[in-house]
Image (cartoon, rainbow, N blue to C red; front, side, top):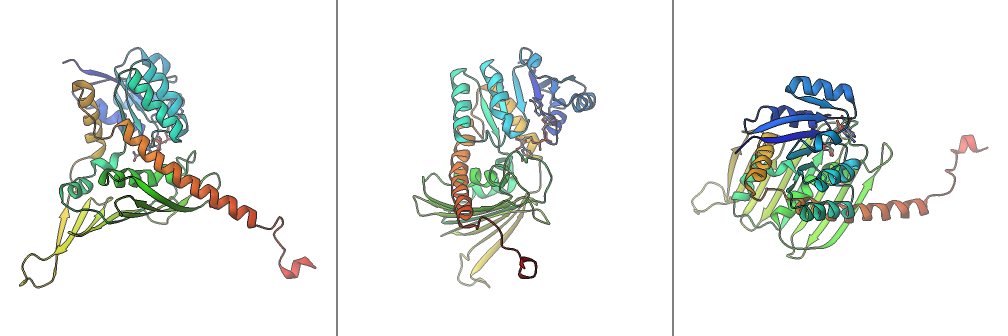
Length: 330
Ligand SMILES: NC(=O)c1ccc[n+]([C@@H]2O[C@H](COP(=O)([O-])OP(=O)(O)OC[C@H]3O[C@@H](n4cnc5c(N)ncnc54)[C@H](O)[C@@H]3O)[C@@H](O)[C@H]2O)c1
């Protein structure tokens, strides 16, 4: 089998890492990198020993597969062009800005018979993989994803930027449908929500509580799962898992056994890219299909609708003019 001809579109913060890793994979020929910022395209191409493009269109005819890592607002337009040309895609998360656009990309991939994978990289987190190997039936899930402000991804809010990771993980763990969603959010810096909280009830009775913030002083990523078999606490940043379960033997010192696992091995982005290349070359099913990226957005859309309704209600309650403090009003 010949080397897979791949291009990377958008080589900013994350796309440059995709390009770096792909340039070192023996089964890949990195044909070029494209970025509207021509200087950035040249700089990344120089480091990866490939060709720079300031317009991605000339790349389309010369590649089998591409990574789309442009800002989310452009995913639909850019990915659509590649899919119509029969190019297999790994589109960074979130797949698109709303369900309608995500569904259109899934439909395009299906119509043109190409693979559409989504960059939900936490699926490759060894801590989450360890959780999946354990027989824990989730009844209560608690996710916190707190990031400091980076100035990136301001085209979307905290739900599509951060919480989308946990929505995908929760939906991976549960097969039940969503029966109720409540959410609230807060915009601090303008444009979109910077902090969000969601409470989701599933048809099997499981409840998930998720918090996301992109204005936290310190970054923090944790997922906790409780079930009849015990409790799992995942530190997704450190890739550590703490499992607590009722002791098997009555003679144990404590009624709860605690198992600390350090799964800090392997690079998630490399494994995600290897999965993509393998699936394009063999026709195997990728770990994160376009349909799953779309399902995460379907849930995110419901959360965003709750937040929009809450903001509208607050706007109606607000007085037209903020009263001046007493000493200035006279
Ligand atoms: N999987 C993850 O954990 C993860 C982490 C970070 C970002 N992301 C996602 O990756 C995407 C990019 O995020 P980022 O932080 O790298 O953003 P970024 O702003 O650092 O990079 C985006 C790059 O795309 C370029 N660009 C814009 N429009 C273009 C176009 N039409 N054609 C070619 N290039 C274009 C920009 O010049 C920029 O260099 C976003 O969708 C984001 O949500 C995912």
